[in-house]
Amino acid sequence: MTQKAYTVLARRYRPTRLADLVGQDLLQSTLTEAIQQNHLPHAILLHGIRGVGKTTTARIIARALNCIGEDGNGPITPNPCGVCASCKDIADDRHLDVIEMDAASRTGVDDVREIVESARYKAVKGRFKIFIIDEVHMLSKSAFNALLKTLEEPPAHVKFIFATTEIRKIPDTILSRCMRFDLKRIEPATVLTYIADLCRQEGITASNEALGHIARAGDGSMRDALSLLDQAIALSLSNNSEGVTEDLVRQMLGATDRGHLFTVLKHLFEGKTDDLLTLTDTLFHDGADPLLLMQEVLETIYWLTCLKTLPKMKNDPTWPQEELNRGTELLENLGISSLARAWQVLSKGYEEIQKNPLQKQACQMVFVRFCHLSTLPSIDKIIETMTSGGNHGGAPNSSGSIPSSSPPSTPIASSPVAATANQSKTVVLEVNQKNIIDLPQSFEALVNFFHEKRELLLAAHLTHDVRVTNYRIGEINMNMDMARLGQLPAQLRAALKIHTEIDWIINVTSDISGRSIADSQKEALTMRLSQAREDPFLNNFLRIFPNSTLTLTENTICAE
Ligand SMILES: [Zn+2]
Image (cartoon, rainbow, N blue to C red):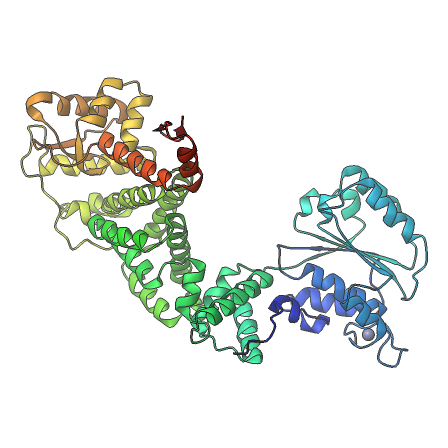
């Protein structure tokens, strides 16, 4: 790899002819045809997400209309020569008749009046006077009105090219006077082919897996993908790495090792809470971001669902073979309903993590909740069992998901309210007949639920005096001091029956080990406080005001 002065790839490889546009076939053929026939309308609107080539297309059109060819006598052409004075001036942003304006910074009516005024005069050098207005949706209402008159009766030598990411913000009066083109998100496979080719041209060593990650992370935007590739190249140079490797790209994107990601999914669907917590602890310790992890889990569930329904996905070149193999293996035991359930519960969990200051814990709680749900039988299974009249053997694990290989946990000593196997069956049936999504999905959520139902004393006992070892809808295993609060399990069971209309099983062990919700909250706050002490700003504050103290409440840390 060379160490020459580096210009960003997006700029260096910016297409200058319609034929070079990537991933926009329809736009390419329609515009080529219109230019060849000299039927280009006087106003064109280019719409699409960022980085798909709107401004690039606008500049190509400007060149196409003003190119005079190598001999100075060429006609309008979809493939401008790139060497005539006009092409060169446009490339250098100094063509007198091509005026670019960013509506994001010039939104006012005066800015537009200037354009309208200048549109009345003929082009100085070129055939056409071309106004390119980027982010046109940012114009004010009066600015749009000022523009409208010129759009209604445009001088023959004027062309407007508008670009926007938000078409709904553009008035209908303007829209109806433009020829509209929707630029598509660029398919990851197309981006991959393009950037792989570009690496070859640049003499950059890059693995296909690394480029696949970059192509997908670009999320439909070529500019974003190229900018990520730029960063990866810079990183590989500073690390003296063997070119752009998968590890390096992963590290750059902050992505979880895909191998671990599939293991997370496997544990989730098998309901292996303990393995999952151990693995996520390690991942977080190694720097994984909880929100990003959940996002990747969701993306993979979506991908698995597509893979299940559209087998042709197996030919997608942006997914490494290893992942296709692991995905296929997971899918052997997974139905669409399990995947859909996972999507529903984890998407909701994603929002919870976003709002929660304790993101790691929130992420793990969402996983724990899902594990418990996945050990419940699916509705299909229940109906099957009921109609066949067969027994419900292995009930908690006979779900639509992969059966857990770990034995179900049994409480060390059960209180009188513990259930028999028959009761357990009833609870599971009842739980599934209700919409379990509506019921509290974790013990913390249950306590909040009791707060809402004004069962305040009960909620307080559950917060301070109970250590839950296992929670799932319909069944709670907990440790508590039975000598002191012997009535609590029965009270809890009665309240649950009233508010959830289900008979819950409460397994109690008179053991006071473990952590109550109050303990966990206190621990979390103490941790936040010690993290806060490392904050440079607070640190400074404490140095300047040595007699001040740090106090903390649920969501804020105050220094006084
Ligand atoms: Zn030219």
